Image (cartoon, rainbow, N blue to C red; front, side, top):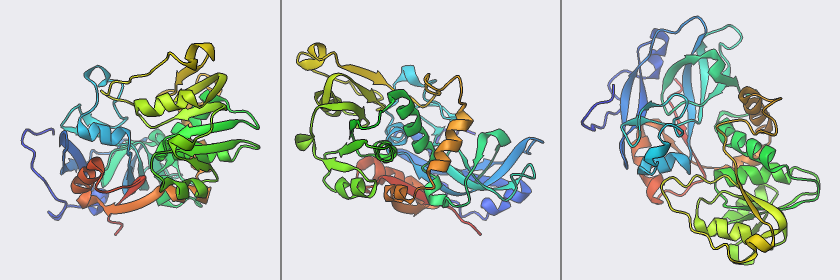
Length: 347
């Protein structure tokens, strides 16, 4: 299925997601080489007794990890760790990658047929997966907002790692998708004062919609009980350490890929007994792993998405057939966005 030449195949050959009922040909977005994508036919297998056939209605582009994959920034030693659940191919390409997908179940167990579900599946018009791989979206969560489920799940896991306390002063450094989701969850905790810190002053409006304060890096107040870092830059991590009170910890959610991280630890790092702890969504936080499964965590994320404040993260949309061009524009910054929604033919 992974070809040699990178030919751009548009979904205009008469075979679209409407053929899923016949289990024919769907279409999927592939990264054929760093910086170049295409839409390819994706034959649908015959579903088993415990499978579902899902027709996609929305997917989302992860501005962090997914664009790093698109640019070819995954280190060779992390190829296995970075695999998405339904990835095909391998890094740096050709590879089918993505994990923010919302669709309608057309075939499968009776309790799922006709339901809107979230799945950690790449951008594809229709697909067949085990029924256990999908999670039902609450009826009062719109499909556009449900695309954020994977990102909110990451934020939930991070806060299980961080264990914020009532009345804490918290800074979130980096106002991307993950940082904004973390800020919103923190803002809902009693007495917690959360400040979203970013170099882009336009993110102040987003912070306000999320119920958080906002500061440019030079204006951010120190003495924080907790700092969550999501900017994926050395400067952001250095700032995060500088904002901590003594005996406090930075929870680092950033994925740096093949970028080198440089820090100056000659200041308050040792005297203040500061810490840096990584948080990664691939496994349930040790603080909850004995009592929560990944399915429990995803169900919680979807329930939290009943909150309409998350709509502030939905900043643009495009058609599926335009995704190769859109990915290039998102990667080079000519199309600014937080979460960019991909819409599919719903006929």
